[in-house]
Every structure is written in C-alpha cells, then in structure tokens.
Image (spheres, rainbow, N blue to C red):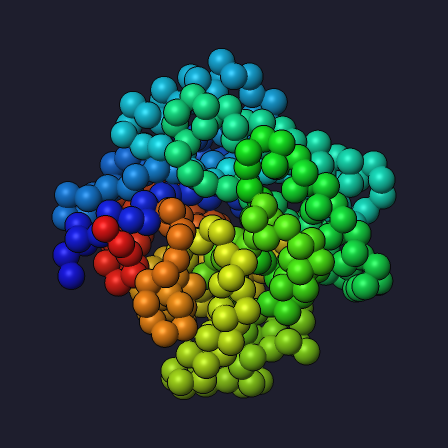
Length: 350
C-alpha cells in the first residue's frame, strides 16, 4: 500500500527528546525547541512529511506560565513550518513544580496546579487555531517503591487526585491521558493502570496513553512480576507467545486508550532519577528491537476481529535518550517517519 493512501491518523514528532536525559555542560546538552521543530519539518519520505509536533510544557521549550501572547508567537512559529500542535505533557513532577498524586495535601495541590496550567495552555492553543486535536498527558508522579508501602490506600489517593484533575480538564474542554510507564507508582503494571482508571471512573475525560516501548515491559512484569504475561527466560523467537501476551494486554487497555505513541524497545530497562526502571527506547531499525512496529501497533489501533475501529486522531513518535549526534542526523527522522507511515498504511483511514 502506498504511504499516501491514508490521511489519518495524522503523524507527529515529539519535542521532549530534546530535553529528556539531556544535561547542560555535558556531551549531550539540551536541544532547543526550534531545532526539534526544524528536524520535524525537514523529514520527508516519498514526499510525505510530519503533520505536527507534540510538546513538553517545560522551559526551555514551552514555559508552563506562558502568556497567551507567548502562545500566539509559538503558534506562528510552528504554523509557519506547516505543522500543528497535538498532545501536551503537563510537568506534574516535583522537580518541575508539581508533586506526587498520592502525596501530602500540598504535593497533590501542586500536581493539580500544573494540570490547571497545562489545560489552560491547551485551551489557548486550541482557540488560537494551531491545536486541532490532542490530550494533556499526566502520570502519578510517584515512585513504585513509595506506592508499595500502602498499595490500596495510595491507589485511592491517586484516583482521587485524578478525579480532581478531571474536573479541571472538563472546565477547560480538555481530556487527560495517563501514560503507561513502569516507573510510576500505581501505573507500573497493565492490571494496575486498568484498576486505577476504573477507580477514577471518568472514561470520557481520563484515559490511557499507550507507548509501544513502555508497554512492552508490562508483558515482562518489570516492577510487577505478579502481572507478567511472558514467562521467565522467554525466547524472543517465540512470536506466538508474544502475540498472545500482547493481545491480552491490549484487550484490557485499548478501551481506555486516547493517545498512542509509536516506538521501538529492545526489552531492556533503564533507570535515571525519578524514572526507576523504565523502558529504553531504540530506533526503528535497531537490530535489537523486539517489536514489529506496524504489526503490534495494530493491536492498539484495531478491534480484536482486526477491523480498523480506532478514533485516535494522531500518532506520535516517542524516543528519548538518543545521543545528540543521532538526533541531529536527518536520516534518523526519515527512518522514524517511514516507520510511522508503515503503521498508517496498515491501520489508517482515509
């Protein structure tokens, strides 16, 4: 199938790989938003480019306290490159002004303040006309080890914080998606995130953001061995077992999925700072990658019978922790775009 046969979902790049894992004064300093926009706008495969970019609402990319005039300037910059803005990451963690969703009253208040600021930006960008779709991304902003001190009590606290966040989102005409990543307490297994979303019980407002790299580790039971779907010592050549495990996981999470990240993973974990064991992204052509990207994307985007029934409006590539020289190579973004076009060719719609 020709990549141009489907126009939907739209294809986005993510800006946050320019910040995540980057440190000033090192060999891998932060990459500015202008550069990430340039990388995105320049990518082409058979004459097709990215449709947009998803943003991290954190300085130096986008200040969470940006004024509407600031956002108009941002919209002009991105729109001038024939791109739109999609989903936004709310900086809900303590180092960026937020706090734990299961923490003290002040920590939870800080979490909700960041959600409110992010939803205000999301609404403003929508009103400006640069953001036709997308969600505001959140997580629990707490560690798995801290959560495990009182699993039931902490899960209820996170759910209550998310319900209050839902009220804020609805006031701004927005939706929230909790990213499935094994480093966040209460969201560190596929069963726990379903449990959490059921406790929140706001399916039209609070859902799931599926990242192919992170959710692969759900099947392996990292940080939640009791919920593993693949056996210990699993042979990655056994495709049938992986298909079965993946189908079980996606059947549980697909009904909650609002936002979808195309990604690749080599089945290893990496821990840094607040990310206590999380999935290591790798490039789409990495020989150690364990995912047939287009095939497994279908488990998220299609109903069990195989028909394309999703309402996902855009796909986003998520890949962090790549060396700067890799990110500055135009071939990197063309390969990423090609993988996303394969996904859309297989599972997209007119």
